[in-house]
Image 1 (cartoon, each protein chain N blue to C red):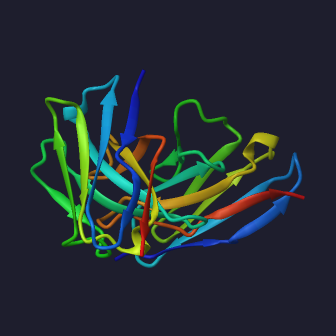
Image 2 (cartoon, one colour):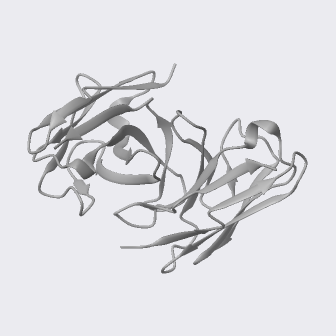
Length: 107
Length: 124
């Protein structure tokens, strides 16, 4: 199974900050990496697919990059509605696996 | 609108069975693979199972293999998860999710539509 490791597990940031979350796969997954946002009590929502493609309706302040084993999710200017938990997920093989999540909190 | 609605969750004793349903609407259900994903209280997301668009292939997480069975009825636009021999560690919110196949990315998909989730509590 492919293991996905996110860092950091949590971070505190202010509105307007640039935020970067990293995700590392235990083996190469090409660009088969997706990012999701989850708010408390809600289902996850797809933000980024195949590492860098922005899902329809997602603000352009979100961006993704990387390939192989190392990936990054960047929020260019954090907004109040962005405080949430973010998960990476590989779709290179089954079982699909998620990172453990990164909780973005208000500083 | 495009929607997935889960049902069937509840409180069940350890060792018993439960069947979850996921009703799809607003899209051609028979054109998509479908997944179940769960989330234990306060924990992260765990993929559970997948079924291909036509039901011809299925796969499971090791943690549920041999106990859970995924199925679908394309005539009813409904996905199912039969859960047998339930354990306390199966306690979670269970989400169904649509597997959106990404054009040009061989075999890759993303979970683009999610249901609201249904809670399963296994008591000992």
